[in-house]
Length: 546
Image (tube, rainbow, N blue to C red):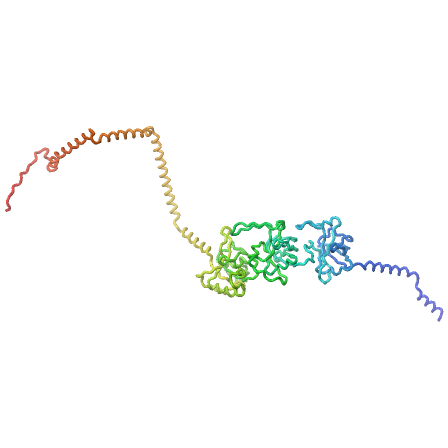
């Protein structure tokens, strides 16, 4: 081997001492990085509406008050609609992070449930994490606006309620069963598309076993005032319902309990127990009733009654069926949609099966079963649908379909017929000659008025006469005349001189009249006998008959 070859081998086999320091520095750096990353876990991002009280490097993430991570960065989202918090989780927290995990910011809050988060006044806000049970992994989360009312680990059942009315239930309100608090309202959301409010409630175990398919949910108000047949009914709820509102559930009296829930089911939240009793029936047969009269006063939810027994519910007033252009026609009758509910007849009939009643009702229509509307309260003009038999009802088809629903035959109500009779009576009354009668009556009243004025004048004249001094002396003069008349009549008593003289005078008058009688007869026969001597005819001589 030559000398030049030996020199080259030495150059490549030796390591220069200059490289020792950089290599040591790299090894130390790698060791420090390994030491730093050995106790850390995954990194997650949380979107919050407001990052108030959140600080990078200071705010902790806790589970059951145990630190499991720390906020490393706080920034705005790309569209500036929210704040994004980046959190470095501790080692071994991967199982907590899944789609069922719930995260929220703990800070002081005031609500119906009281004041919460007072401890953060001194320590500052922190992030609370509630682990989920899903096995899927997730690293991006959205924080809850309000902390969950009930822990995820609490045994029980979650249910969804819907309401189209103003139920005024808020998150945290209690869920009660016969006065006992068995759960709470967890979520409340108004759905714009469906125009209804959706609630999520939680019922704790073992009370969740009380919920069946026939369970009804209604709003329990602090003060309930109802007017029924017995008068005014005033009821006070629990203290919690007086402060706010509460949701109560149960099976209304007289209805079957039903089977237990085997799957998720959505329930309707009614505004009162009475509404839950009357409208809480699920199964029924829908019919359209075409009315040829006014439906003012008939509202959705009004009862359908048969001889005073409720057998159904009015579902829609009026029914809007949105006809096609080719179906345009004058609206002669108003359609309403009712639901016949055979379950209400449980205990009154042998069978309440829907299919059997679907076959039975058309036969009853042929026998004269008709629907009409009647007034349940004349003061408030509240109407209901009355179903009854009319023996004289005419033949009407029972196979008609309107807007996809079978038609229940209708008949004009008694109130409408009474209205027609009153209208006819008023028409006859309008045809009467009232104007001439009124004129005659006015003339008669004028004559009576004139007579009354004359009577007033006569009464005034009589009053003037009575007030004269001579009229005041009249009673005394009458009394004196009566005394004189009494004295005169007393002088004609039996045996009195006046009576004897009167009798003698009458005797002389009678004798004189007998004496004058021949003279009077002569004057009647010969009036001139007072001047000439009266002629005396000789007596006739009797002669024999020749």
